Length: 497
Image (tube, rainbow, N blue to C red; front, side):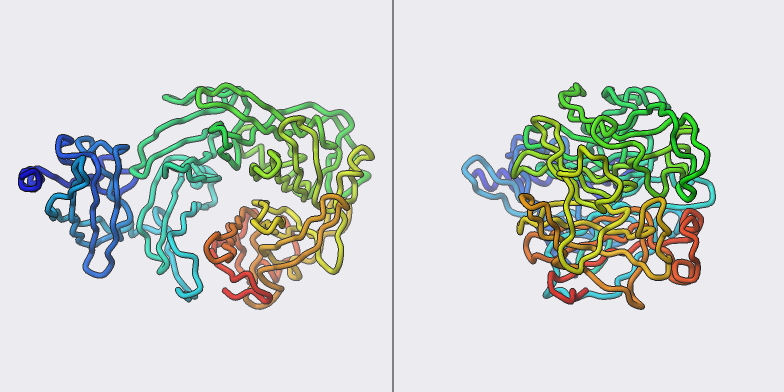
């Protein structure tokens, strides 16, 4: 009798398009909560079939999110509801047609799959953040997007917002955290609804509506979730420094008092209270500049006249010893910091130019491996090795001559670490220089894939070979047309795409 009543009542189930237009491929299914809160929806478009499962965290009268559908297709949604005894209703079949992707390439990037070997690929979806670029910086700054694709490269979910996105993280509950160009950290659910939002209280743009202020000048590049539920994010501060460099090419150029941006690492709770802060100015040498110190990065983000000595672009918590890996692009170094003391545990990167008090923290390279430059996304793998994305920019630090642009390339690279003896040894790389390699002068990401042990690499801002390998001026990448690619490599030598 219970099953019959339940099945009859399901005729009241409805499906509607996502009320939030920021996630247009999603739908929402509703039914009376009196029938039960646990449910399953089998989704089919006639070719592809999958099942979504919901527990009490999704009130059915408010709506169950239906995500993972391909664009421009008619779908059948077969809903079953489970009562308290675990018995299921007869299926109620609903129909929903997803809209097509935007046709304008300024609104949605063209995607192309060039290699696909399903038997060797990591299962699941790939989530990434494309960027839009144009002659006017604001053209890209006001465009933020997240995209999920399946193993065929087909779009199954995407999200649009009004500010460029520089990092994304998945929470255990499925929500997504991201950092914006205008110095906010935002948490959304899979329907695109804002669950939490924080902003750097001293940002140039002033308060952000509906967001919680956090004591910082900026939020930039990356956010991570700590085991205690707090967030750790990159911030920054400006200091005026006397007798500072004015050139990264000419060591003898006249010096002057300069306004310099240095990075901070902030841990804050959900209420926005800062409970831990680490400042690069207090531990690193601001006079150890790198190439791109004067490239105007902070000018373009609302801080005219402010130059950049460290440019952190990545942070990751290492639960093995409760430390943080902080990646400094301009320093071409990864710094490991102990959270309890704030002290530096070690520094991986070209060992020249560091002050005396940090000499015992530096790694030395063993064997024929090469150092990384302007890198992104360092992480410790399950093998205890250091994996990162090596952009390869310049191949040197001031005031040495940069390598010829035509002779370098970007790659994922892995190093064995001996913390006791302070040595690194290169043990794996995604590729060597060749006709199919690319130079991604900015951005980049790498991920260790748990099921297969493969490595996913994102070449975030690759230059067309006709530009990268026919020009020798490293400053050209700020004006050159670029593209992006994502590659999954086997963890073999040589690696297979």
